[in-house]
Image 1 (cartoon, rainbow, N blue to C red):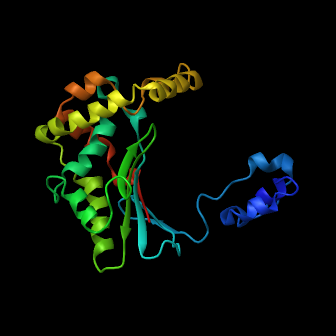
Image 2 (cartoon, helix red, strand yellow):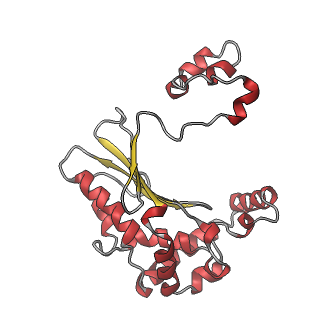
Image 3 (cartoon, rainbow, N blue to C red):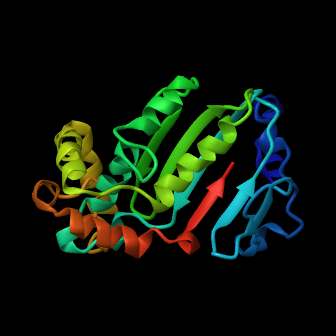
Length: 239
């Protein structure tokens, strides 16, 4: 356990991390630690799988009060993209906040901001190599807020609108992010990935994608990708 491995005199340091102190001690001898199976989630978490394959996980926290953190985790990222699709997982993530079946013209953003969940800090998303994650941090002190916030996650999962008009508007935003990724930090990160994953698909599938794909990909290509990968059996909702 962390307590067993901690150097002498580090009790004060470990005490400042209550979650670490709560970890159970490993019963196996040190030479067998590498074979130990670690728990996937805290024992207090409730979890299950719906008939359509969607996994759900709920873990109650006392702080912060009257707030809920909601996540839609989609189990794929840029690694599944073909060469002509590089960057479209990230574009689809952007389009979710633009329009869906039930929310037009950034109405999701406006609704969440109206209940005290500003864009960026309390409503956001990211695409990585192996997953796409939508996050909401919302108040729960009024009836209906949690239900509608879960409805927003449902919209991301099944009903993101992907029209040529929507895509045309969002290209500019994604292209600007692509340009920003070419700064010094971005170039260092790219070099780091290439050094770490030499001759591996990871080197060729940075989530930000390729400029020519962002500029020229069609809405139909994005819709096909969305239908192919946004499936409940690939998803989990965490609260």
